Image (cartoon, rainbow over all chains, first blue to last red; front, side):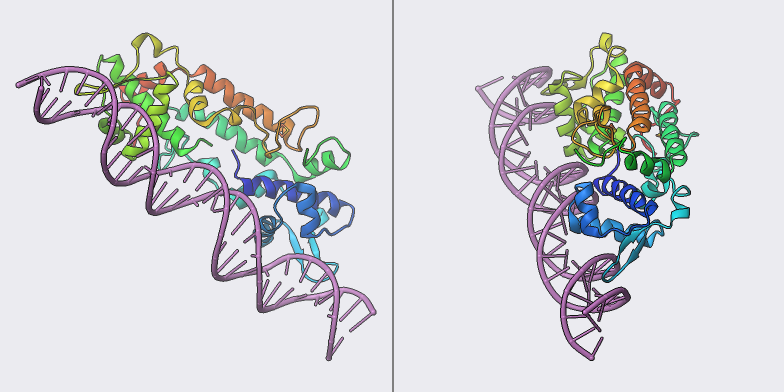
Length: 144
Length: 144
DNA sequence: CTTATTTCGGACAAATTTATCCTAAATAAA
DNA sequence: TTTATTTAGGATAAATTTGTCCGAAATAAG
Ligand code: FES
Ligand code: FES
């Protein structure tokens, strides 16, 4: 469904959000540990999330990653997925036609768009805040 | 969403079904043309679909691929996807945890399973027959 | 039987995704 | 100012997916 990069990116962002809600910055190392992801690869992903403006990064001692607290409930899962995996998953044809076009639909079009749109809506309606809250109170987990 | 192999496999199977409904066998070459897929790669995929028992193959002149007509409305999209992409898409965790487990859910679990289950149900309820019929009467298209 | 045609199957190659390594740049603190 | 720490970014490597090539096996027809 999502790429590995996206999976790591989502988990990392949620973890950063939890810490940010407690006014803490977190280092790459800590994130990779908590998220169970390869450190250097995670660095790349965080770098691109920072460029997309989803997270903030700071160099030097006491540096690390954080998210402005007021933005945590503004940021939606959709934003993270879009930043990393692009919008093929939201608009692409289920059978890989160059363009999904209802006027020249592929055989699965009508059934597929329902699923795809539901996914899109779900991602747009899911805030980073609710994901982070669930993790914070121990209801959900990032590794196992 | 689906792998390239799966996209090609679905399109190829639908095309074979259309031809089979007209009592025609179809060659690899023709399939790859109609489906706009690389010939040799398509061969591999058809080979594995034949091994899975979803399509029938015959060697030699007048050979090719076909599907027993009585099975066309028995075969579901789910069967094709499962044969090619396995069942990660049906049971895997949205964030890549080793196992999707509601008792130790990842942050997106509750929202993700809804989408995943809807996808599964859609694929289980969609017969090859209806996909092939739409193509046969020109309502849908395999390439563009 | 011979030949032409078609799928099978293994080896190989290219492209993409995932992952690592190392140096540079920033920056906080001694 | 020096040092230690942390992210940035480029180069490279490993793994996976996608795609190619070619000879073997089956088989229909002359
Ligand atoms: S054309 Fe294929 S999903 Fe819309
Ligand atoms: S545990 Fe992640 S989707 Fe179920």
